[in-house]
Image (tube, rainbow, N blue to C red; front, side):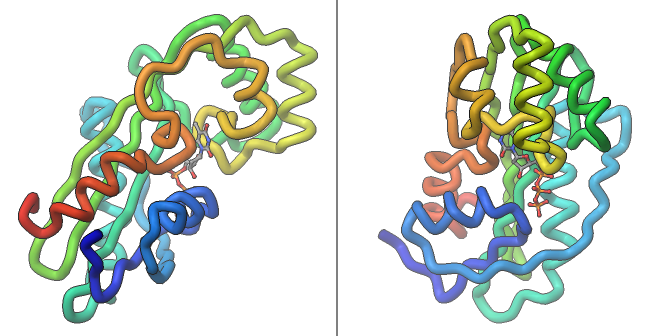
Amino acid sequence: MKRFQKIILGSGSPRRKQLLADLGYDFEVRVSDADESAPNHLSAEETVEWVARSKAQALRETLVDDELLITADTEVWKKNRRYGKPANRESAVEMLRSLSGTSHQVISGICLCNRELLHTFHVTTEVAFVELSEEMISHYVDTYQPFDKAGAYGIQEWIGMVGIAELSGSYYNVVGLPTTEVFEAIQNWPELA
Ligand SMILES: Cc1cn([C@H]2C[C@H](O)[C@@H](COP(=O)(O)OP(=O)(O)OP(=O)(O)O)O2)c(=O)[nH]c1=O
């Protein structure tokens, strides 16, 4: 396995940290406040790549030598509606009602860069929910408080055990880091940039 002098994970997400550690890499976490308000005219795929790049650009000047920075943005999209993190209980309940009994896409934008090179890509997973009852939605939101999760749900939590009808693509992409594609990108860095 190719090793780098230093990988920097530009993310405050505990799930991304765990997944990158599980891939076997040593890394340091660096977090900054980046602009996540992508221009409206962008497609879903362009939006997540735009945000991942914006997170990278906010940290790029802190890089030294051959440090490799990895940033990501995971969003839920359904028919041109962008589901971010719910601002409150009401919004979380509304998001889950609207995802209930239908399918949506979870798209992650990933950005790898050093001081000279930058590479961005995205990975899409199709997720279908069963019909979620009002009781299931209230129980989940009140117990798990999914306010830090796009689309108001964590597939790795109770709702993922009882609410998923179908999943096509990478499971880990839904959790926040498409591990297969990130591993491949790191192994092929910097040739792919
Ligand atoms: C859909 C879904 C999202 N999520 C999480 C992944 C992301 O952490 C979060 C989406 O927010 P992001 O803006 O992608 O990431 P973040 O704010 O948590 O961290 P940072 O910007 O510092 O990298 O939602 C789950 O944990 N499970 C899920 O099933």
